[in-house]
Image (cartoon, rainbow, N blue to C red):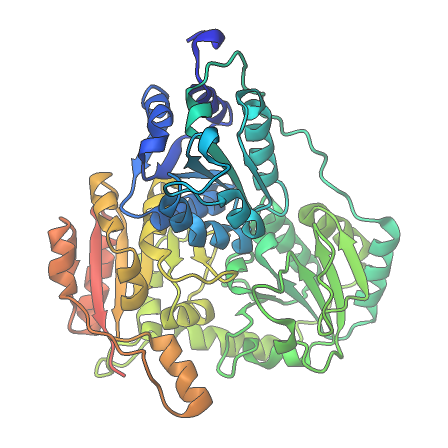
Amino acid sequence: MTQDTQNGAELLVRCLETEGVEYVFGLPGEELTDLMMALKASDITFVPVRHEQGAAFMADVYGRLTGETGVCLATLGPGATNLLTGVADAHLDKSPLLAITGQGARERLHKESHQKLDIVGVYESIVKWNAQLDDTDIIPESVRKAFKLAEWEKPGATHLELPEDVAGERVNQSPLEARQNVARAEPNTEALDRAADYLHEASQPLLLAGNGAVRADASERLQAFVQETNIPVVSTYMAKGAISDRNEHSLMTLDSGPDGQAGGAVAESDCVLTVGYDIAEHDPAGWNPEKSKTVLHLDHEPAEVYEHYNPEVELIADVAIGLAQLTDRLDTSWETWCREAHKRVLSSATQKPDDDEPFTVRGTLPSLRDAMNDDDVLISDVGSHKMAIAKHFPAVQPNTCLISNGLASMGIGVPGGVAADLAVDENVVVATGDGGFLMNAAELNTAARLDASFTVLLYNDNEYGLITEEFQEESGDTYGTKLTNPEFVSLAESFDVDAYRPTSWQKLSDILAETVGNDDLTLIEIPLDR
């Protein structure tokens, strides 16, 4: 194809190829005809889904796992609005994503017309950058900008809208080459010295790892910091694996331990160094309720203004570089002051149930950990099971336990499994509840069509269990949370998916050992008693 024979859609696809895009997840529509034909002729694999929300979740999880921008596609109107939840999830979970939506021809956009909405306006609050491609000449710059902003710290979502007449217009342009030449920011020397002084003065310092600690080489630097200083680490849900939970310095997540707050260690700490922490994920009022702790902030962006999170020092820099330079300034090693808390947390996480106990989410996790390799990937949907996984599932490597905890959107599990199977070579397990599963269960069809291989653990309590728990805690009663469900094993089998419903702990362990490492698509329904 020569430049003067291409149309806008073909140029857009050439730009995606230049960015290294391998997959586009989406659902086609009439206004996308030129774009779909351009994708067909390209080296990019288009993955048709059963609902646009599934496409956005796939792009979201693909971006989190690879660090490269996941791309999702939808037509105008309802297609574009159906993408919104997954795009918003990427926005708050800091996952690089590009949403591309179709639009009607420009000649009808000034008036009310069929399926026409101001999608650029709708998306404005949930993306880092957002534009309509209203001229073919701006396509190369716009695509390059969308990828650059999606991937640069902190990552997030971007959006481009393509009117159908622009898609069909002839254009004489070439893609801009992708560049990775933005310098990684180094921290201010004075701020580093001040942070080191605060740490030297602390008797019980603690490191709080956030979402930013699992990206790039930050995890490697974090582990080196901890080994040098003996400072214990507690993680947010989305930072699981930033430091191995087998490490004696790991206290798992903030809510871990018999009584939560990492076995009491958080309350005992006097100085907290946060690394890549987002308050959108975990309210600092929970771990700094009296506003009495010395807080040191290391992140790519300044701290949000909040009375419970008002850092004495803000190190605004690349997280990995900041950790390395801070390590060099610390000339002491603290005693492991929270050894008992570590023991309590670890004991709580590894305790197996008695044979006569009914199924619980927490009880399944030791057998699941046994069945998974250290670098296998667990994706948790949102629900009561998420809380158990966050507190009690030991993660050994970064990005091997994915939890949506920014937007915390139900329905991410099965689409996330599809994306993870394409993104990594390791085994993939999806943990979901009956509520979240049925929100995007149709993507099992997408998984089967792609010959995907992952295991779905479906915890079935016939209700929106987490909401029930919260209602009962606040009011002593519940309303509107009970569900009736289909026969899940038969439903899965209708999608040509192997399905099981174990009746004992031993049978569950045997099924997990057999299925997690095989090449089949499998669903395991675990009935929960309440």
